[in-house]
Image 1 (cartoon, rainbow, N blue to C red):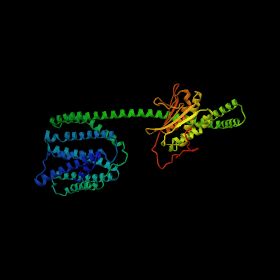
Image 2 (tube, rainbow, N blue to C red; image 1 turned 60 degrees about the vertical axis):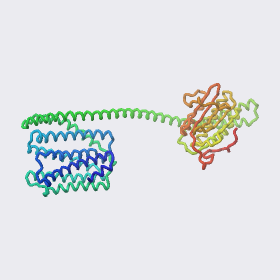
Image 3 (cartoon, rainbow, N blue to C red; image 1 turned 90 degrees about the horizontal axis):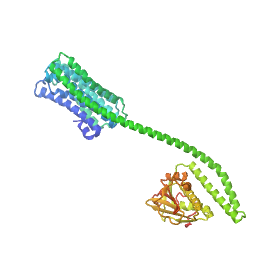
Image 4 (cartoon, one colour; image 1 turned 180 degrees about the horizontal axis):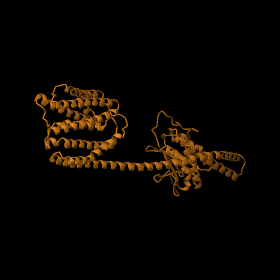
Length: 539
């Protein structure tokens, strides 16, 4: 009764453990009550060939099954299935052994002396195996489980010793109920009862100790040994000539039936093992494939890192002559020149500035790292980018038209990196439309379904953007500047993307998409934006 609350409170594997423990102890107490009923109530001896002796033998079976569950050690579901099958195989073997050795002398050919001898020997072997298993569980556990196993081992060992001395007294006809031989038996029962009550105060939970593999290995080996022992028992039955032929025939038929049952269990276990091995093989192949892909990615990353260092060094070396050329072109523009010479000097300055922008993008690509994310207003960034690009679109005689969203377009990102993206794309767009002979650039911003959209077109009408394609390696050669690796990398960090559309009828159109965040009233509209000029009306 002291263990029943554990069955009610616990769940899963722990509940099964307490159920088996309770079942084994209940069988034990039931047999003791049966013995007491004959000795005290009926005042007669228990029958020599007693059917209840099977209950006494079987009470250890659920206890050993509970120990096989090992609730103090974690295990995966596959290991649990195999161990349950292995232990079921051993339990069938114990049942077979009892029927093989004891039952024939009780029901086939009644022989009290042979019955008692075989029963006591087999029961002693069963107790030794159980106590050894319980001792190993005690040594391999920790905390509350260690205390519980220690007390259970002490109570069961006391009972085993009292049972041995009681059998010794019975053989000498000196045992009777209530004699001194019953004191260790009463102590063992009280010990188990107190253990159940005491454990209820602080019920041990499954620990974090890693399950060792030796337990499963030896359990599987014992199961195989049990299966292979059947032919030996069959040979022993045939060669044991002194036993009656009826017992010999009974044992042979029993061994054949046990071989069929245990063979089926071994077949099921092998099927589970094959399935697990196939799963592990598939997992190993996937792991090898993933490892190869990772090695390729590492190699590519190392190549990109080397290219980034090379690009960074080259960009730094290019900065000095570009600065000198820009200074000379500005100096040349400030002198008296003919209209034709002034136009040529302006074009020189324009291309030098474009080259400097490309070098800045290369430097940004080489030094690209994690962005410092903060709320940023894209409209403010666009105004700043347009202002920075003003010398270029004025020199090309291109008119820039803007139509910005009335509400704030707040995105979470790095303002410097995003400003670099917009300046780069606007400058590249100006270069492309100048080659096509267009003289208008339209920049429109809007919030559509939580996405900040910036459309850049060489016409005043933005048009439909359903046919946009994402900028990538397959882009037309004329748009290769629009998809610079630096801009693409920055937009990926901001969960954004760059799309484009180009044909002769509609011209060039560029679209940038970045997810927006809800506007924060505490934040100013220019939060995190390097505003070089205050917002001004559309250009």
